[in-house]
Structure formats: C-alpha cells, structure tokens
Image (cartoon, rainbow over all chains, first blue to last red; front, side, top):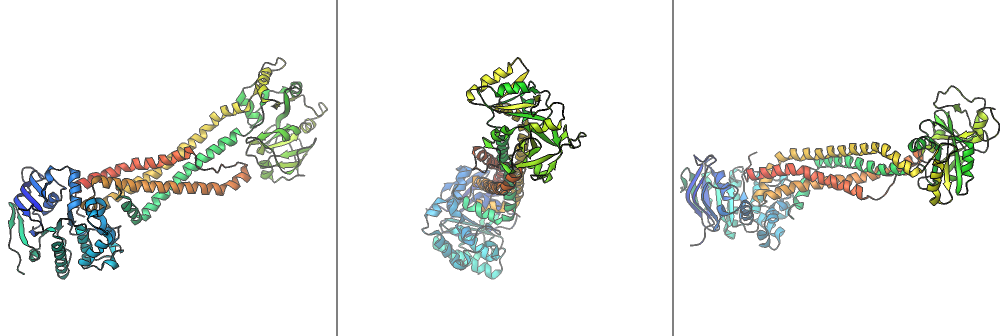
Length: 233
Length: 403
C-alpha cells in the first residue's frame, strides 16, 4: 500500500494535560486524495492544522507526512519539511502586504530549494497558476496585493500554496469570506488544479455545503475523525 | 539567508514614512558626531599651529604654560619682565638667527596691544609654517603706527589711516587713556585663526613714546618676553638650558610645541566633552530606531505568521528584523556623511574668512570609519532585542494569528 500523504495515529493534544482538546486515534489522507474535514468552531481544527503543519507538537501519538514522522523531527527540521512539502491557505490576510502579487506567489521559493528546483521558470509557472485559478496573471502579477478583492487574494494565496508542486495543501476556511458564487468557482478551479498535480488536500471548514467538491467528507469530533455524510449535490 | 534582502527592502519601502524619519534622525546624529570629530582635529591642528617656526619662547621664570598663555595667547598678566640687556645678549648670540621682542600691558577697546618690531612680521609663523599676510596696508613703521589683527579691524571697521587710542592696562573701560598720543592704523592682517587676530601690533618705539618722557630713545628698559629662532634647531636644547641657568636674571625658555601639548591637555577636555555629548545624541537617534521597530512588531505579527507558513524559520524572522535595522542604520550613516560634508563645505569659506580656521575637508579617516561602524554595530545590538522578541512571538504564534 502506498504511503499516505497525511497519517495521524493515537494523537492527543491539550494545553492542559488532564483534558485533551484533540484526540484522533486514526486518520489518513491518501496521496492525491482531497478530503473535506468538517469542524465547527471550537472543535480544535486550528490545533489540528498546527499539528499537521508541524508548528505544534502533540502530547502523544504520531504524525506522518509523506511517510516522515514529524514528531521525531526537531523544530527546524519540521520548518524545513513544511517549507518543502506543504502549502497553506488561511481564512484571511494570506498575503504579505508589501510584496507584489507575483512576489507573494513566489514567496515559498525563497525558503525551499526543492520547490525552487522543481520549476524551470518560476514567474511563468506563477502566472500559469494564477491563470488556472481564474486570475489574469499578466495583468495582475505586478499589482499591489492591497488593491485586490478578498476573492482575488484567496486565489493568489492558493497559487502560492501550490507553486513548486507542494504535495500537501492545507486549507483553513479559505472560502468563508467569499460569496456563494465566488466560493464555488474558486473551489472548482482549485480542485481541478490539485487533481492535475495530484496534490493531497486537507480542507477544513464549518460549511458542510462545500463537501461535494471533495473525494471524501469527514468530521472532527471529540473522539476523533469520523466519516460524515456529504452535502447533497 | 539570501531570501531576506528581497523581503527587507520592500518591507522598508512599505513603511517608508517611518523609515525615512528614522534614517533622518540617525543621519542628523551621525552628521553631528562626524562634524564634531572633524572639527576636533581642525581645532587641535589650529591650536597646536598657534605658533610654529619659533624654537624658544623666553620670559621671566613663571612656569611654561603661564609664559605661553600671556606671551602667545594673550591671556593673563605677565608677572615680571626681561631686561633689555638680557634680550640684547640673546639676540646677539651666534647660534641665534632672529629674535622677536614682545611688550604687553596696553590695550585698545579690550584687545591687547603688543609692542614688537619688524621681525615679528617677517619671522612669526603659524599653522605649520604659514607667514603672516597683510590684508591691506603695511606693518607699523616707526612710532605712531599700528597694524591690527583681523578681528580687531572687523569689530570696529578700522581701515588704514584711522586713528585709534591705546589705553593703559587691560579692559574696555580702562581709565588711563593715552589720548594725547593717538596712533594711526597702518595695516590690517589677514585672518590666521590664532590670537594674532585679536591683537594690535605697534612698534616698541610707539609704546616708549606714549608712556612718557621718562626716558628717551626707542628702546625700552625691559620687555615682557621674546621669541627666538635658532640658526640650527639642534642647538635649541643647549640654548634652552643656557637661558634657564643664566645667572644675570631669572629666565626660562620654553619650547612652544611642548608647552602647547601641555596646555592642550587642559583645553582638550572641552572637545572630548563635545564628542561625548554628540555620542549621546547618536545614541538617542538609535533609540528612535529601536522604538520604531518595537512599535511595528505588533502590526507585523500577521506578516510573520504568513512568512512562517511559507517556510520561513524563526531565524529568518530574526534575521529579517536585524537586516531591516542594519539597512536603516547604514542609510542613516550614509545620510550623516553627506550631511556632515555638506555642512562643512558650506561653512568652510565663511569660517576661513571669519576665523582663519581651515576646516579640514578630508576623506573619512579610520576614526570616522570606526564611528560609523560603531553606530551601525550599536543599531544591530539594540535591534537584536526586538528581533529576538519577534523570534519568540513567531515561535509561539506559529501559523495562527487572530487579529
């Protein structure tokens, strides 16, 4: 069996040892699989993303990304691993305000040699990704990010997360600030691009109606990650 | 770390208002520090160049600094005199090339009157061998003529031909005025930046004439001090010793350079204080930088989290802040250099015309470079504190920052 993109085992985390905030006995995302994780606010999804991102360490359990055990790595090794393999999209304010659109998309390449080496012509690839996500790359690339609408900003953030073929995309409510039309077009373009690049996706949201864009829908509960019915298409 | 310059520059440009102010504050303080440093060396050169080419200053036995103060700097009162006979003895010595007699005791409107002879105008040297130059007119020729230092003429608008009245003793309101024997201005000296600018030079005969008919003849019975130039410098020490041991009169002979160095140890405190004050101003400029960085930290937390999410390690965050501070300090140092040279360039002709002081406009020396290095180094040390805080915050915040 192929190595999963994300694999969590016997995971427990809590700011106070007595009451774990998060407890996940077993959860995995396969390579190229796109998973929607339903988590109402307060369910610990931000904590989960911090753990998967390698920023926080679990109290117990194992986190494997692409077969590598994050919990066995030092802080800077986790930072390096994240830079090489994981792209993030957050709910809002994803962009560095003083960089142009193009420089924001190219940002991960400053910190990851592997992602830099995977692309021959980074600016061209950045423009291609912007175009694939519904932004006219040529026109927007030199613009200041503060001139963009929220929807445009999220597309730029998505292009940045995918640039250099990050194997894993972690998204934290990236569409909650968008209206319904923008949300659907954004998601379908993003999913198409991820499918093309075989990027594994862990998409966290409290909005169940988005589940139909994904291969699998799960819910984060007090006892773990459980299969959940997707919304009707 | 090659990722950082491409971030630091646009980041500073994004906050260019604050950045420009910070650079300006550092620039002004660096300019002050550099100008004080450069003026210091000019002042010191000018001070030690007050008298040059003179091998010995001879006067009564009072102490070297005291003799130098009243004979060359015209500060304080001479305690005793040197007899004309002793003066003649020295000036006639076979090793002596020239002597310049100096008689002090009169004044004109607060400026010292110095009785001397033509030798003063031919042999007095300052600033490493510059001779006295006349701006107009000529040296006093015989009785009844005076040649003025530049500042005396400027203060009262004297031109050659103007009559002036000498007063007995010092001070502007001296009671005993030699009104019955006015003196005519013969010439005005060009500025020298030395006490010569603040003195009135007359011939010995003039003083004899106005001090009354007690004894006739152009030669005084005694003089205040005199300058000696040796034919061969090697004989200076021999002459100095001979004069100190002279039995006929209690004399002392001082080598000007030695006494000047001794005097500078006292006067030099002022410029060290000045330097210390400007160093404090520079520190204030750097504290401004620190404050600017610290206040920006909170609003940059989100930015730091974004950088972390795209793979920046905490040390990148630390390096980014340090680099920004270093760039600001370096820009401030550059601005300071420009400002300091600009000011010196502007002030130079004016200072030269008014004070005869040649401001040394020279490339930055080791000391100035060390000062600039210290400013940038101090900026880096100071900003290590906010950078370390940002580092801690970046570690603690991770990827989630709620605004």
